[in-house]
Every structure is written in C-alpha cells, then in structure tokens.
Image (spheres, rainbow, N blue to C red):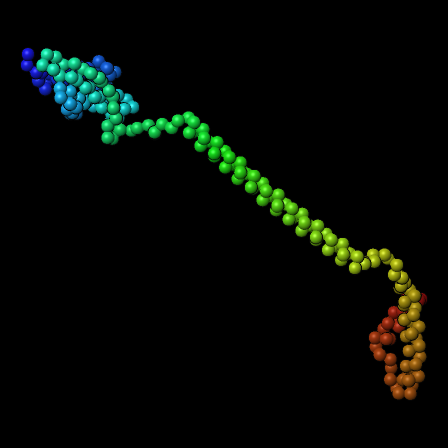
Length: 197
C-alpha cells in the first residue's frame, strides 16, 4: 500500500483538529514540521476567542499502512499573549510577609521620630516657661492705684496763689521798670479769678 500523499495528511490532520477544537475554532493551514522518522506535525491557526496567535498542532505517525493521530494540542505562537509565569503560593506568601515586616518597621521608625520630636518640643516649652518665671521674679510691676490724686481745685488754688504773689511782685517791678506781667500769666490769672467767683 503506498504512503499517503501530503493532501491526505493535511485533510486527516485538519479533521483531527476540528474534532478537538470548538466549532469554527480551526483556521488556515500554517505549515508542518518533521519531528522524526515517520512522525510529522501539522500546524493550523486558531480562531478561538482569547487565543490570538495560538496554533493547533496535530502530531501524526505515518506508516505505509495507515496514518495515526498521536495528539492534538493548542500551543502559543511567537506573537501570542501569555499569562505571567506561575509563582508557587509559598513564594508569594513569603514575599507578602517580608513586605508586611518592612512596612511595620517603617511605621515603628516614624512613630519613634514623632515621639522624639514631641519630647524636644515639650522640653523647649518647659525651658521657656522657666525663663519667663525668672523674668517675672526679677521684674515687679506694681499695678496698685496708690498714687495720690491731685485735685484740680487745690492745684488751681496753688497756681492762683503763686500767680498773685508773682503779680504783686511784677506790679512793684512794673512801677519801677514800667512793664506789665507777661500775657500768658495775665490770662491764666484771669481764668482762675473767674472760677473763684
């Protein structure tokens, strides 16, 4: 029995891919790869949603008697979108624990710095208050109203008496010298005399 032709291999591989893939999931023929003696892999494009750039690989064993389909796989191509590399849960958990420990250490350091800053502010406040107390001891302010109040009437009487005495003297002097007392004295004396009346 002669070996199957390339067209027969293509049809057989496409049929196997269609049976495995969802409806309308197999696209155009891409090419083939000789894996080994009597083993060949046919490649078809994938039309499946979410698998852009992926390919259907159909591996077949070709003998003189028959063609046997070994496996059908959906594999990524060179332009396929791939999921990120899988990381075991233990490794992810260890990374998370290390991050939490680092964050806790950072928070503790910030709390210690804040406490130191508060202590420094409190010490500055106490020093300022001590200085103020010393200043208060050295400087005494007397707010009492013990100063005697001078009554206007007594002050004006004293001024009037002084002016009268000066007036008498100026009159005798003026008789001798021919001069009158200064004008501001005469005005003030006149006002005081009016108040007495």
